[in-house]
Image (cartoon, rainbow, N blue to C red; front, side, top):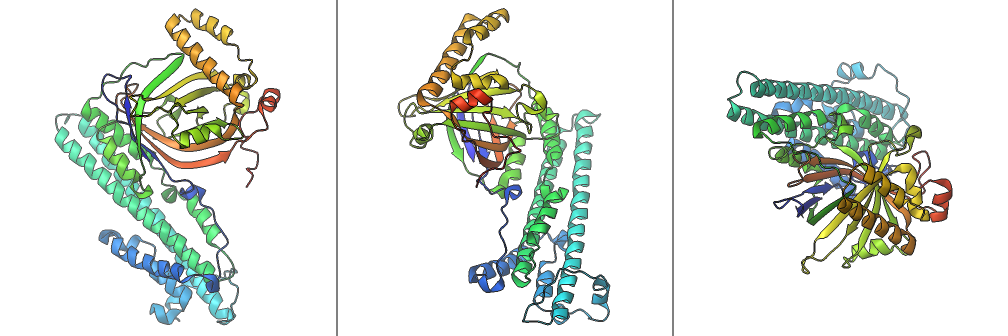
Amino acid sequence: RLKLQRNLNATAPVLRLRRTKEHAASRSLLRLAQPPTRERASAFQWRAMVNFGEYLLKNVESAWKDKYVRYETLKKVLSGGDEELGIDGNEETSRYRSAALSMSVPQPSATPQDLADNEELFFLLLEEDMARVRDFTGERIGEIQAEISAVELLIYGEYANREDEAKERLKAVAAEFLRLEKFVNLNYTGFDKIMKKHDKIYETPCRSHYLTRLASEPWARGNYSQIVVGLSQLWQKIRGDKVANEVKSAAQNFRRTTTKYWVQTKDVTAVKARVLMHLPVFLQESMNGESDAQLVNSVYLDNTAMELYRGRLNKTPGAIALRLRWYGTATPTENGKDGIVFVERKTHLEKWSGGLSVKERFSVPASEVRHLFDGTFDVDRRIAKMRKQGKSENEILSWKTLVEGVCQAIQSKQLVPTIRTQCYRTAFQVPFDQTVRISLDTNLCMITERTDDAIHIASTGIWFRSPKEKVPP
């Protein structure tokens, strides 16, 4: 989802693009159902299987054609035997059939030995294909990283005046990275579909097991953040971006308009590569430069009538959304720590009225979140602390107005944690300069957070679901 924003806090309009992956579309969130038998498979599913084989043949890179999953070969092994493959049954297949696999269950349509032999050959060919894809992808990633290092020497070294050459080489690296991503996606889909076909023929389901294995493979996880970060830093050097000074205030206020767009999953890397030419990846301190994305956790508050949700859904003028947000994979209270939680309020205003949607937020220690729900949040103590820190009276007044407004809404509307969203966010902007910002959210999932009531939160201090608890269906 791409989100276009205009930020009126800056001296120039802001364009913000934000992409959120469709719910449950992530491979890591793929829900695996029990595979159907061949008798239950619909004609549509069978045609889809055939169509993928044709699609794969049309989309292979000719220079890499012997590196892909042998989809048609594997399909023929499942369907028949050596005659369809054109393989000498005495010589070639003996190499594969020397090992004994115990995963086959005979079906009435073939003898037990025929099915056992076919399945044994299928899995051995499958293992070879998985190893070949893994090795080839690793080699290509190594070559891409080597080229990035070479361009870095070109930019920072004695050939610093050859920027045009550096730009063209960076574009070539991005193009090669996109080719490799397509290669990875095609192979992942091929392995998925061929295992689905296996489970339609054999009564022993194996697709779930192999997809779990694929998810653990570096080439299938698709976590190549170091390449994205490397490209970002080199483009930033070529552009000569100037880093703005970080401004910290007790209450933060963002006035902006927003337009959102959906982007297909297959185009995510292409969008990143295009944006990197104009804006750098904004690396937060907690990211340690190891990843181009950061996990964002947002717990949304609402009541039993879902009043806030319906107000935002209907775009009621003045409708608000309240959420508690923290960053990183750990919980705010993990290992006894007292992490920082951002309390955010978003107010919707109609464009035709001349108003602009506003996002306001302030931070509190995780241990004090409970006091927002029971009405005991100590505003005066925080104000005294802010004065000692030298905050201006305008800052203090702005913070107090926001905090009191949030607390009043929680109390009057009886708001409690209702749902949590998680996503990985890649932000593009000149550090600490929000004039132009593009954010890209992927791997979105939603978790129920419904708690009993504010009294329960006040008595236990628990306002978010523990990762150790089982999520109800």
